[in-house]
Amino acid sequence: MHLRSAVASDLAAIEALLEANDLPTDGVAEHLTDLVVGVGPTGIIACGGVEYYADFALMRSIAVARNARGVGLGKAIVDYLLKECRKRAVQSVALLTTTAEHYFVDRGFIPVARNEVPPPLLASSQFRGVCPASATAMFKVLKVDELDH
Image (cartoon, rainbow, N blue to C red; front, side):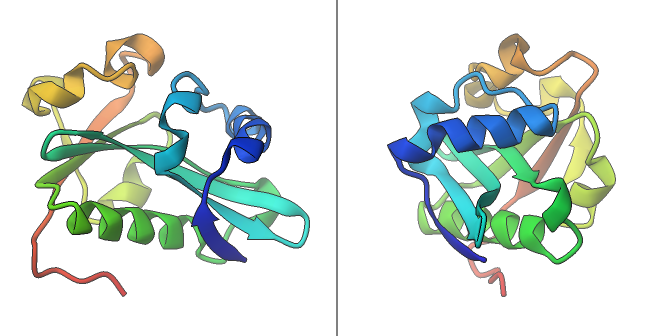
């Protein structure tokens, strides 16, 4: 598998992958330029993205095809996205999850109350109702000198 930036012709495959993983597709088209895809022999098998809001970012749409799980594709995408955030001098990253809280804890995110999320991120469609109120908000402060390998 190799990672690359998403392009317009990837949109249908990304949306299908998100739907297969019970993830929302709202806003994907508007943020397509900040999505990355994992491409394998059969096409797009993983994806993930970031929405940027001033000095903050919202990680979203992290998905791996069921038949491609367990080999580190999700971790590779999350690490890539965090590296991109650091390049842009993003201070912190938030996300919402209904199923992957433990996964993201292992990546340095901590569960937080929604009122602890920076206000610019609360303006995103994810926080305004696309994700259910039961979704766990998670937060990670980025350190400038921290490197992802």
